[in-house]
Amino acid sequence: MTEEIRKLKEIIDGSDNIVFFGGAGVSTESGIPDFRSVDGLYHQQWSDPPETILSHTYYERYPEKFFAFYRAKLLCPDAKPNAAHRKLAEWERAGKLKAVITQNIDGLHQAAGSKEVLELHGSTLRNYCERCGKFYGVEAIAHSAGVPTCSCGGRVKPDVVLYEEGLNEDTLYKAVRYIAEADVLIIAGTSLAVYPAAGLVNYYRGHKLVVINKTPLGDKTRADLVITGAVGETLAQV
Image (cartoon, rainbow, N blue to C red; front, side, top):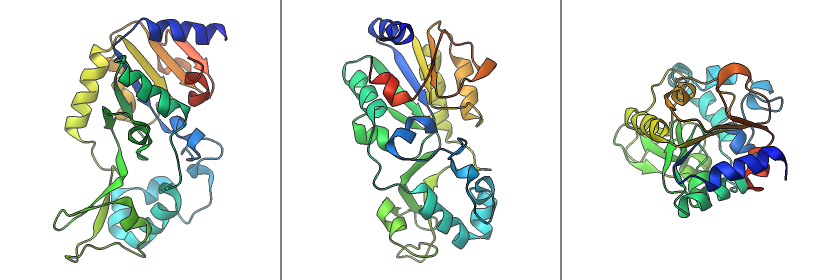
């Protein structure tokens, strides 16, 4: 056990008010590509940049192209929770972890058993008709062709936050409250590049800020403990 892991274990053992803030790097060990790594979606060939395709304007203007990209790149039906998801669910059951705040849209935290999960950017598992509001599961999108439509004729939209769209205010408010009241804040698998989500960490007032990431975040945080490595691999050792 390295000195960093020993220190992390000490921090976890000594707290029952932990909040976890995670990004794409939490799910890469489940086989879901992140957006900004060398192998991520932003480095693959497509007719338009992913940031453009995943915008509200593009969704409205070119829905067929949007859904083609969405099905091909954002739906990962075979992905399973990894060691990070399982460990967090375990901490929650033990009364140590208060909430998981995630930028991911894959639903893997819930699949692992976590109950208090704040999804800043929504979820691919939820889809709604824009006309009548009827709910559709992920299969309705995955197994449809072209632009998915409701039985009422309306378009079915994934419950994910696209570029140019605002985050859910209730979710944001709860995330701020959890972070502000946390004893320990663990930031993991995120480059803290996407705002407003990344700005939430500024609400932390404690002195046990842990950063776990494959690449250093530089001076973006005032971390008390920095561990460079894969999130699941790291948490599995605690």
